[in-house]
Length: 301
Image (tube, rainbow, N blue to C red; front, side, top):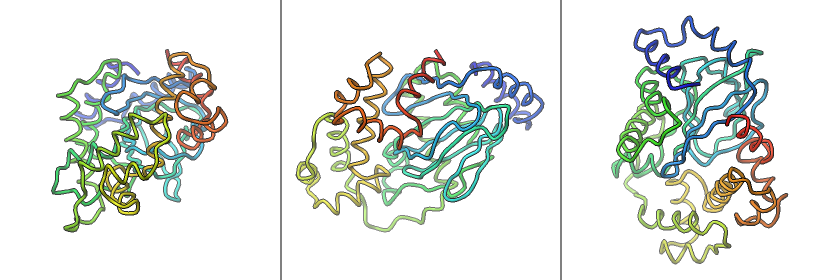
């Protein structure tokens, strides 16, 4: 989907008819194109993609980020929190960190959508200290709010270019406000998170993801026992320290594969014991094998 197509959605939304007459043409266009994933340049841990699929795109898997997307054409069908869900063109999807879900096209016409993956700590930072007690949880994964849609269009209109720091920070503030507005999370209690200590642990796990990291090292950095650290880490990052480490290793695997590395080399250079070890975790995190992910990326280039 070109930036002009996304701007077309913006014009329709302004006219109050986002998912109107052009949907059929978009579905026909989608059905004629091969499956593929196009990725924008990563910025500050934030990923943006455009994906097109026919049939089942992903097996059940979990991200450690918020996955916030906009359905462009077709029906986006997915299982989430024990129910079958469907997003129509122009609707917003919100998947919470560490929630199991799958995904695919709900009709024979195929599916096209754009998605932004935001680390939970970015949302925490954008909400400020008054919301330090926990992450916003949006119970309904499919929303139709015009303001949320406008903010997403602004983020996803041109994934060929970097957003830049100013636009990125404004976007994070807008998305955090949208998530909070739709959140069912109760108001935080007085117990606050030690953000600097948690961020220091996250920095170590990210920067040294290809090395073994002992829990004692994290305890020393955070000045917490491992159980307090685990609880606070999950509240801040949306997942456990171990899973956060695995996901950073998988991020490195994707970078290596995109640069042309073999599956075996990408696995070992990213901290996994071997290719099969990496492949198991890749399937659980992204709902497809690393080889299939690489083919989809190549098809979109």
